[in-house]
Amino acid sequence: MAEIIDIRLHGRGGQGVMTSSYLIAEAALLENKYVHAFPSFGPERSGAPIAAFARVSDERFYIKTEIYYPDIVVVQDPTLLGQVDVAAGLKEGGIVIVNTDNPNSEAVVKLRNSLPPGARFATVDATKIAAEEIGIRQTNTAILGALVKLTNGNIIKLDSVISAINERFKHKGADKNIKAVERSFNEVS
Amino acid sequence: MARIAVTGDDAVALAAKAVNPDVVAAYPITPQTIIVERFADFVADGEVDTEFITVESEHSAMSACVGASSAGARVFTSSASAGLMLMYEIIFIAASSRTPIVMAIANRAISGPINIHGEMTDQMLFRDSGWISLFSEDNQEAHDQTIMAFKIGEHPDVLLPVAIGLDGFILSHAIEGIEAVSREEALKFIGGERTAELKLDTKDPISIGLLHLQDYYMEARAQIRDAQERSRQIIVEVFNEWEKLTGRKYKPVESYMMDDAEYAFITMGSSAGNARTTVDELRAKGEKVGLIKIRVYRPFFGDEITKLCTNLKGIITIERAHSFGGPGGIFSTDIKSALFNTGLSPNVAEYTIGLGGRDTLIKDYHNMYYRAKDAFNEGKNLPIYWWGLRE
Image (cartoon, rainbow over all chains, first blue to last red; front, side):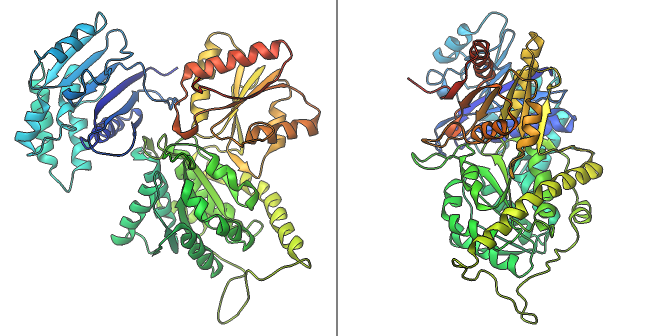
């Protein structure tokens, strides 16, 4: 049976969470891996909590369900904490990445303390990075730099993310998005 | 060949682009919208020579398709759920007019309550129309089958429209890697232009779609019946040729781990991926279970299914669809009928899952399996059961 990395992304409608999951899949495919990435839409409206999923494996796999036991959780909107159980089902040794400007806030600390033993926790101010580099508070690309850093490029490499962004945003601001990814790669902690 | 990252809808749009149809008439509806949007891009960017007919409804979309196909054009369209409901009248006329239109369907639940997510009932509903009907397990299959559909439908022994289903969102909006077929390969495979023996032509006029009353209606319908029967062989031939071109093997009914199986899941579409994953896990625990995947739903390849059931103690049908007041699941009723003709009588457990896109987890498949196996060991059948229903 194929060994699969399960990634679950949380955000709100309009924040590009689906695009984040697609970019993970596109980057992984550039490394000739096998992928299945898709969003879980409720009513399609801005601001509503949504999740997106990305499965990545070196081998072909067939599972098509949503992800309930993630290896990695990415939270693009810190206002979800306390509203959505973002770390639900996190696997042993899993990773949680939260976009926040206040790693010491009550909600963030509470999440960090609730994680199972062995879990890794990191924050990055992707909103600030996106605002400064891209000019909009859209964190769907910036957050990926942190993901690559925390996984040591084992799931997707930085170069693959950059290539995927170049392809997807070739008509609109690929360079700025790539800068945002690189900053998030360097600034995650 | 390098695989590219595309959604299921994109995979279908790329297949249509490779085919470069003469005419596309379509109306957008979630979760099929990307297919139409993407194809409109190809038209605007001059990447296809297609005449794209924008229409005000699905009824008009299918009507335009029937008109264009009657004039000998190669025609593609796409829809889902409520869109299909609105074109329902013309769906039947497309079959009776013997117009080999290809339609991709991003399978979606039918209102009401209104819902945009995955379910196959929309496509299974028109099983009695004369359309050939196929389903896809993944994006590669959606891509490949869209191209193969033209060759099947346009074959002079068939001349029937062909529907290709892909699960809404689970495939339509999911990125997977596919090997895309080039235009050169696609047109070499299906033929550069459609050759229609009979078509609307001002120089050689004929009439199509005339009134048939008690005198000839039954004969006209019998011709559809016969074309459906003839399509069985053509479908297999086209699948075999496709394997020669791409190396990808297709069969109307496919099996996995069935050689020594005592029990089998039987399902269609992306659910087959979950059932396959479950089979691997159950096999690792020593369970003798396999998978039968129905790819071609109409015509129904009952003999191929029952052959796989010869040594089974029990079958577990799993359908993302339901017929209210019916004698069981939709295709499971077909299977039971086919089994009756053979004299085989494995026990049967029938499940309805995932209506309106509700997720069915691998642990659910395990539980459905053990529930069925327990009943089978007592010699019992399990009547249709809606899995995961809230109390």
